[in-house]
Image (cartoon, rainbow, N blue to C red; front, side, top):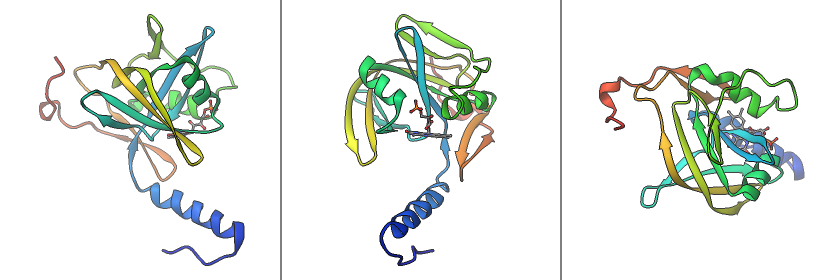
Length: 179
Ligand SMILES: Cc1cc2nc3c(=O)[nH]c(=O)nc-3n(C[C@H](O)[C@H](O)[C@H](O)COP(=O)(O)O)c2cc1C
């Protein structure tokens, strides 16, 4: 499939549509990035999460330049990343779409200044290590201070072609132990 040679904005729109459609074939996990500002939990659903470095432990995600949650994360300079299981699809939908509507039954866990989604497959507590321009997104780098997760991974929440799906985790015997 190739972009049609259209003029002006139509070509750009066409390229964006094709780009999104093709990238939808790259299956990702789903995570929620949270921060707390003035007693209010703020955050967004992301699938741009990547483990960026092992020494030191750094992760990154991309956030739209206009994102209110992105602004809060950059102001507070600390955040958590919760990697979601299939049982947390409501949380993914909430932090992607429905923040202005009634709160679903979300279970938050806290430790000091950090807040995250309870019952997640993995949680990373981060300090902001940097934010870099990336077109219409900002590339946010987090220094991982601490991490936790259950020994057994729950069924995974994944995303592709604009939709959620569930995936059975690999057998625990194929994962190295956490402790
Ligand atoms: C599965 C999924 C993944 C997403 N990944 C990202 C992402 O990586 N970066 C981003 O800026 N928005 C992403 N979004 C969209 C945001 O979650 C959504 O726009 C959110 O409302 C932004 O929060 P804000 O209103 O506080 O800016 C994703 C949405 C979904 C459903």
